[in-house]
Image (cartoon, rainbow, N blue to C red):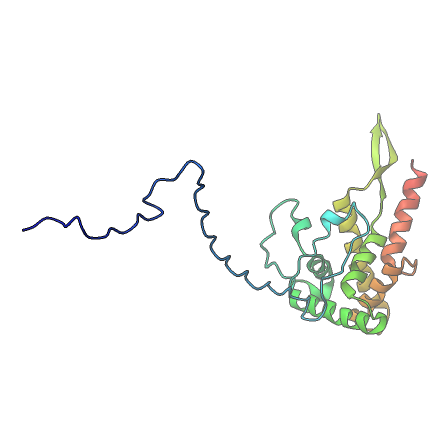
Length: 228
């Protein structure tokens, strides 16, 4: 067999095989096309009607404890029960439903309590033309007491002293008083509890003293002011 012929033309060396010169820079790699971004997940409105966009908390002390994560139906199914200090991770509307369940007709009936809140929100949206979630946030801010009274022992004497209320307790007391005011009003009138709850939230959002929650807040702060 004969060897390779030397008279045939040879192919030029490729860019990867031939050595680079001193003044020659390596070729830049071709960038890969970026992957398309996934479509944004739609934010579910509360009960399929009320959006969470635009809901603001004006009180900076209460903002970390008003949990307003977008959710369709606020029902954690007991996943947060038994864990201390997890109330701040429970939805504000669900906490209101839990306090409504402390009434005699709502004990253990969370779906019924959520239905009452949904009907109250429908009435608020029809009467005020505002987002009921924003009205509830404003009502909690206006009904949250800033001072409370505790008792200190000096020897054998118990003396009342005013103390600042913790933000988590302020939210808890405000939600409890709003629910209690709606339950008390439903026992004294022929209106449904959903209408009483809508009236209580609307009055507390305006800061009116006709609201049970706002009236309790003013009373607690007045007693605390006298005990300073």
